[in-house]
Image 1 (cartoon, rainbow, N blue to C red):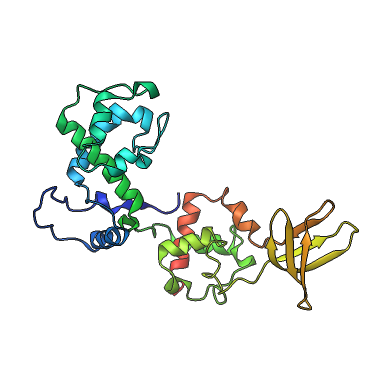
Image 2 (image 1 turned 90 degrees about the horizontal axis):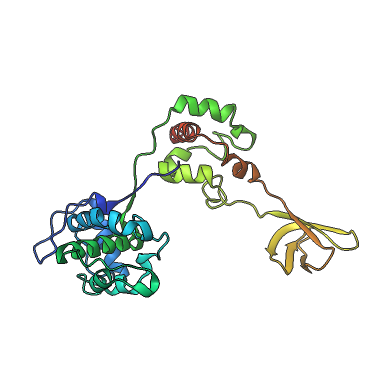
Length: 278
């Protein structure tokens, strides 16, 4: 519903599995190559061979391991040591051919060496896409109607209750990319610096067992202690014993509630409008 993510591995010019010179790379694949070098990943998978392997893996192995190898009734193969240490199918192949009867995996002895090699390459590609964040790219998400988004912002969405296009959201369209803007729009807790600068500390009210209340800026809260700094700057650390209650002010509760209410159209219309605030 939110951000369309595509693996650049699907859009890459197929790389040779041999020692041929690499084809011209797009900006996205160059980023992926730099990232894989930084991470110290192994050989770059061959997209064409991996595509062939996907067609075999789905009907043969997908029922137990999921269509992408990330697990279903069977285990997640992307975490398998046999897959991670394999290069050309030398470790994966024997497992496929012989199975693991003690663990409920049948043997697939009818598969050819080429088919096993393709399955191995498909699994290596899935590991690549999971490990190499440089393969991720955001597609164009500005697909909504800006006018409808403005109407929603000022009306049904009740955004003006807390936000202003001339205040905290002034020029927000030139400060954030559309993808980051939409993420901040939906998850402001995780992107607290994106809207209106540094978010002020949350306030907490602690009620002690004798009924006395302390209010201040929340410094720490877990199952055992709550710490706050009151208006006079005094630090209080209070044990969460029986009868002690801590209530944290949540100014983002409305955003969290709206996550279950937004429609796709409202999200994209609102994003399209916020992008225009240059």
